[in-house]
Every structure is written in structure tokens, then in C-alpha cells.
Length: 114
Length: 111
Image 1 (cartoon, rainbow over the protein chains, first blue to last red):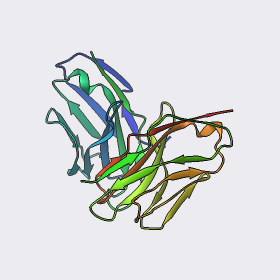
Image 2: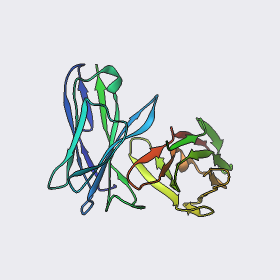
Image 3: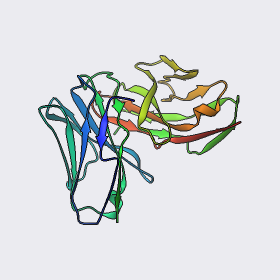
Image 4: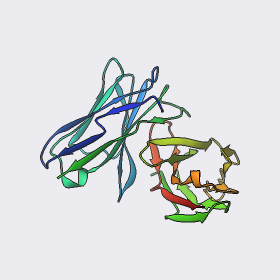
């Protein structure tokens, strides 16, 4: 158990809908990262937050957004969903978010868009 | 930009066989390199890391050496076990913020 929790574990929805994925980092970790894992594209970095502020942005679509709240949990919002958004979404956390902090991954949320 | 290229899988080995999973990278700066492992139904776990050229990371019998001259970070294990069956990801970061992962190599070890 990494100490990172993600809810829900599974999510099934329809095209055009909007969903919210939630992540609680390990106790004391300030930084949260979001990743998308799909069969054809592997693991893609989406975005990183550190202590409530966006720190780095990767291959995140405009239809996707994220935020980190004062209690340090984070939410990833996916809107206008398309079939191709079906994937595993992982959250990871680390201490300070810089240097060689080890990232601890949650178990993921599996999203299926029908 | 930065990227990681990882050997295609899947890889199937007999127990006690020697394992090599190739990983090469492209980076503009001086990245840190990582190997992560993902067991079925779980998130990724850090297996080992190396922060500078010629560093060797090691853990649970796995090793990888940071080779700047060949821009490689190949994962090796002398004798694999059934419990090593998993997906292995090579990754790098130059900033400590944005991480780049390879596509993953699935390893199955058969008794």
C-alpha cells in the first residue's frame, strides 16, 4: 500500500459526459502528479501540482483540468468525454515535488467511455 | 524534447534465466533515471534509480547502470523468479517535476 488513495476505482460513462477523479496523497506529501495510461500511448504525464499551485504541465488536453485543494487532495476533471479517453488514470504524490523525490503511485481509476 | 525508448515486449523467461530490458533515452539536460515496476492491478512502484553518469541503481536483485555515452539505462537481473512477473517502466526526469515514461515491457516468468 503506497498510502495514495484514488476514487473511484472504476468509472463507466458515456461520450460527451463529464467526470471527476479524486486523489488523496500520502500524509505529508505536498506534490501530486496525474498520469494517463492507455494501451496505445503508454504512461503519459498530464499535470503536477505542488501545495495548491500548478507546477508542470504535460500532455493534458484542454478538455481536462485539475486542481489541488488546501487539504492537498487533488481532483482531475475530464469533460466532453470521447471514446479515446478510456484509460487508467493514476495519481502519484511526492514530498516536495522537486529533485529526486520518489513518487508514490495510487492504484488508479479505470475509466471506460462508451 | 526528453523521451524514453524501451524495448518492446512481451518478454517470457523461464525461472532462473537472465533478464535484460533495454532502455535508451533522449534528454536536453542531465536527467535522473528510474525503473518502475507495475504488478497486476496495482500502481507503479519505484524499483531503482540513478542520478548521474556511471551510477548503478540496485534493488531486489535488479540492477541498472546510467551510461551517458550510450544514453542507456538497461535493467538486468541474474536469475528471475515467478514473482518478478510484472510490467517494467523506464523513466527520466530532468527537472524533478515532469517525468517521461517508456511504454512498458511486460515480463512473464514461467516455472
